[in-house]
Each structure stands twice: as structure tokens, then as C-alpha cells.
Length: 243
Image (tube, rainbow, N blue to C red; front, side, top):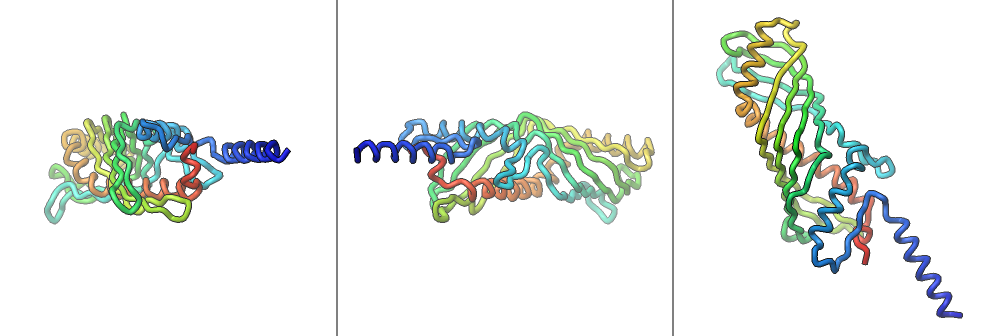
């Protein structure tokens, strides 16, 4: 009788533990010889949940991925051309594929991951000042960009906080195979200024991307770290494992 009761209690405990594991978590076995591959699968399992957001843990949707502002000095001199981007919406962040991953050690070796995103689309408001191609080009309007073949190399460190994991630091290095940028609804639709600006952006996309990259990487790292910790502080480490 006692053995039967213990068995029933054990089964109920297993059931409760499984029931408490959120749908967005795909647990792995600690003894899995392909543990890294399992974690990669678990991260990719998260994609639709990240895209739509997870209200029960107050994790916002990453489609679109919201960013505040970037300031780009594109030409030198006292009247150098400067663009400020604000209210940036980045589309395509959740359409990621994890190419590789190296697990870290809490308080020790950093974790590393390489993530590929086929296409990122950026929509933003912009203001500009200075002279562009000998034409005064101060104004504002809508900024559009498409980045193709995006690779993000992530490096970070974690620590244990009780039964939860915390990302203490995170860095992101981006590479982009192809970039297309343009503006619209600017300069009161002055055709000459619009065409001059779009010509500059088209012919100098690599320069604009380089000017953007450092700030963009820092802001992405901060936002990615914030999202990761919002998830991790709501899911005990034990729920990432089946054993």
C-alpha cells in the first residue's frame, strides 16, 4: 500500500513538473551527447514565441524589433552631412537560424553563438543636416533600409542567481552581405534633393553601414541582453532540462 502511494505521488510530481514547463521551452537532457544541438533546437523552437511576444512573462514581441535612435556623421567638415534616425522598427529579427553555438560556464568561459538572418528591413524617421554633394540637404522624412545576408556573432557571460540564469554581458558583431538604403517623403518632395540623397545612399551604402555599425551593435547587444534576461528570470534552470 505504501509503495503504491509513493508511486502515485511520484507520478503526480512528474506530471506537475512537466505541466509547469512553459510551451515556449523545449527542454534537453543533461546527458545528451548532442547537448549543443539540442540547445540550438530549443532556441529555434522559441522563434514564433519571440515574434509574437510572451505576455505571461512580459516579454515584448520582437516583430518589429524596436530601437530608439542612431546618429550618423557621413561626411567631414564644418558642414558635414549628418543623419539622425529615430523610432526605428526592425523587421526580420525573429527569422533567425543558429549556425553554431559554444556553451559557456557561469562566471567563467563565455558562451558564443553565430546567428544568421536572411533579411532585415528597417523603417525609421530621419532628420538630416549639412551639405550633400554640394547641395544643402537639411530636412527630414522616412528612412528605409534592407540588409541581406546578415550574420551576428554573439559573445556573452552568464552567472547563476539562485535557481535562475542571468546574462551579465553580451556583445554583438554584425556582418552584412548587401545593404540598400533610401529615403522618401522628404524635403517637401523636392525631386532634386530626394534624388541626390538617394543617389548618395545607393552609391555609399557601405560607408553608411560602417557609420551605423558600431552604434547598431551596441544597441542590439543591450536589447538582446534585456530580452534574454526577461525570459531567464521567469524560467528556472531546471525547466531547461528533462533530468
